[in-house]
Image (cartoon, rainbow, N blue to C red; front, top):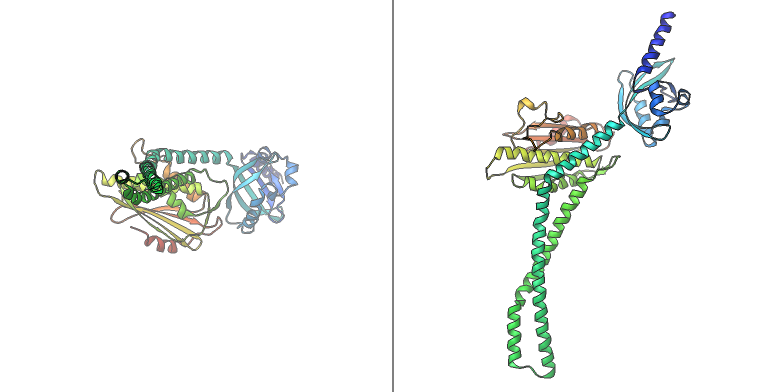
Amino acid sequence: MEALKGNEVSFGLLFDTISHAVWVYDADTLNFLLVNNAAVRHYGYNCDEFLSLKISDIHVPNQIEEKRALLEALDPDNPSTGTWQHRTKDGRILEVEGTAHAFEFQGRLAVLEVSQDVTERKRLETELAQAQKLESVGQLAAGIAHEINTPIQYVGDNLRFLQEGYEAGSRALECYAELLRAAETGSITPELLSQVRQTLDECEVDYFGAELPKAVQQSLDGIDRVATIVRAMKEFAHPGYKKKVGADLNKAIANALIVSRNEIKYVADVETDLGELPLVMCHIGDLNQVFLNLLINSADAIREVLKDSDTKGLIRVSTRHIGNQVVISISDSGCGIPEGIRDRVFDPFFTTKPVGRGSGQGLAIARTAVVDKHGGSLRFERNEPQGTTFIISLPIEPAASPTLEKEEDEVIAGARI
């Protein structure tokens, strides 16, 4: 008996020493049965208040059904993990990562859950991702300015041409008005007719009549091009939403290609094979960054191979919908990834690019966005005879199960260079 009491005391000390919130609750009623001191500190409820609550009371409402479904499927032999939002007594929202274990406690099925407050870490990750996005935009700023400047220049040239046409047309109309007045009074003279002919020749009425519609259409095309670039930049730079929303990934890829066009067009041709995709529940701002990072990496890899060559490489982008997954592949004919560093390419701050060309964060952030935030996968394969293919697999719905590897490989095989 003394030994048992000693074990209980030791367990209590250990339970309250843990720095993360830990609680035990009934698997059926969800009532709290036991909480540690860290839970009291972080959430603001005292022990008695906690024991009058259910685990569902501290979850934000839109996650309660998801939590219940997870608990129903809980396997005593396999703890489950999840990312949740909890509400404290004073109304603050905490981002937490929880690990739940099912076990028998005081003669009933209970759940022991450890909840780590990662609110600050998530905030820093968000700021880092946004900083990396702005860094990408900064690096591409000169190219984007060039892409906008080109259509603006010919819009400006066409507007000046339209101004010349308007002035010439005004002179021609004045000449015709004078001729009409003379006809009405019966005072048309050979001198007046000669003057009219000379003015019409100088105004090049036939030439302007043929060319002005073309200038208008070119100007409209230029404005559309600028609007497309600005719209792509606006959508790309948007910080995104806290919740996942349905997004068109083909449109996101098209925007990434627009934003990176000036970086790519001198070194590679781009081929796209975009299949019909459903809307994907995702953080589209994060995926915008993933697509841009991979496209820029492909351009850099091709540039490394071409050096001063006048030839171009090839970047190929394909998308497919298979089962409950969307698969995106981005292939290039670049230098490839050496065998010796393949295990490190997703490590933070690891880069083979020269100083000032890359921070080593691009692929690390891409992996975090795809794997950690979306439950997808990001991997790469070697192309023959050279180059790399990065393959992104994303669930269409957050709770969707992964597509069978065999099915995914069938699609990827048809999308390689």
